[in-house]
Length: 229
Image 1 (tube, rainbow, N blue to C red):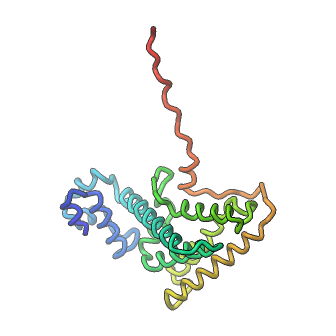
Image 2: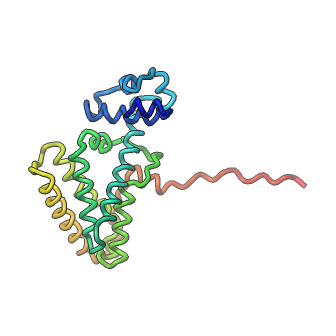
Image 3: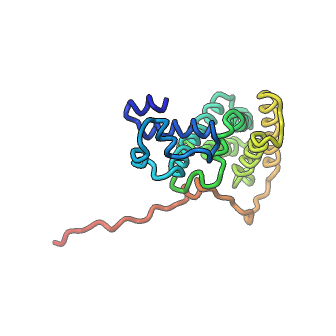
């Protein structure tokens, strides 16, 4: 796939493909930019035109994978009837099964620094989750008082299960069992949130590199030049 993309003129995409293959074979750190270049059939100097380092390539791959995951979550939820938190449970199942199916790549994007506040990812899994929680709030399934920061509560639950599974700290025999456990976890988490009917203004609001990017205000540009009369 990587060499095919390169022969079609997409060297950047071919390097991303090669890096993803190497991650699956050797883990998040067991490969180099030179090896990715060799997989594609180009010199390291050619790869440096697109990525200045292995870390830059890994970060770009993380952005691609997260956007792919965002699409997977959204498509899974769109295929689920809109009845209370069922779509939220579908989101959780899709997230956890993705991690279990592709653990090496999941570990790559789970690590700190995989993406930065400048990473443009669309659709970002965080945005997919927040959109669904907003929908549940608008529909009256989630109290408005519980909505601030609820995405971090839900994400912590499903992400925690995903990490426990791929690190071998929790064992569930098959995909059906994983999905059942994930669904139970999501409903339990959502039911807990649904009981929060009093707002807590002093509750700390977590942030991520993605939410930091969303809150960044573009620096004002120079004032337009007005010609002298």
